[in-house]
Length: 309
Image (cartoon, rainbow, N blue to C red; front, side, top):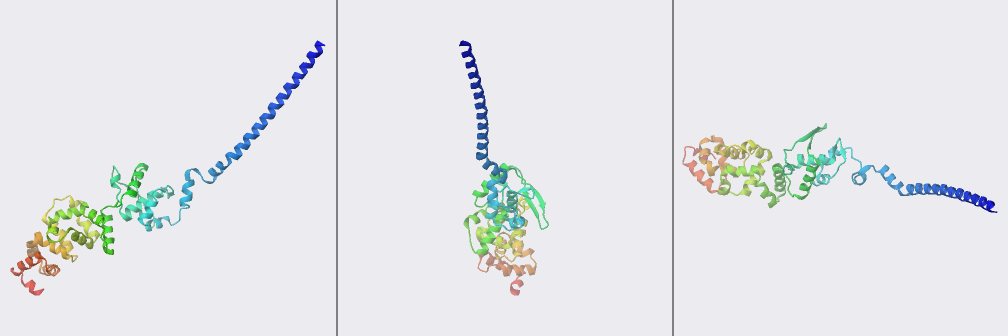
């Protein structure tokens, strides 16, 4: 009986081990199937997203869409506000970020001044299309971020030419923005003019009248007379006379009046008869300096010019 009992127990043990092995195999298969099911249900959507929207372009793609074929023409005709809205766009246009194109157009068309945000002279990448030359600012990402913050917070981020064009626009519309006028009158070029005049603009008129005369004379004339080379030259009577004579030639009455404050003798002796006659006709008749000058002419050997006029 003892031997038979031990044999029966051994057989029962073998059956138990065999059953455990089968259970382990079945459990492993079930676990693998569960893992596959979890992988396919949980991660499938993420894989789909990565396949449809590559990388970090998911948000950007929905915002800007496909780059239009006429993108350069659109940039050239864009308003300053539209260009500012593109300063966050990383999409590439002909090998360069769209934001660089937008900033380049802002600088060229609207004379945006980003020099205050740079620690080095501004340089450009020059690109040519059949219609024009494009200048893209050569700056790094850190500088670009700083410039964007500046442009989005500064009300007047413009160069001297930018302020001149704003003044032209306002004058044509019959509008006076005191903030713009104040900044224009503190431009290096305008301060140079005031230095030339030695207070003549205050004696005979006003700073606002001087600004109006300069705007009416045109952008090219003003910036040619007030170029950096001239501003770095010592102030002289010759510079003042050349400046005012240029505006007299543009038929600006205020320029003629301002010449009389410090240079009446020069006008009386150096102007030709025809120039002097035109000059006298340009003068505001009620001004004190005009009356004084006409009296000097009447007492000189050139009094005949008054009779001819």
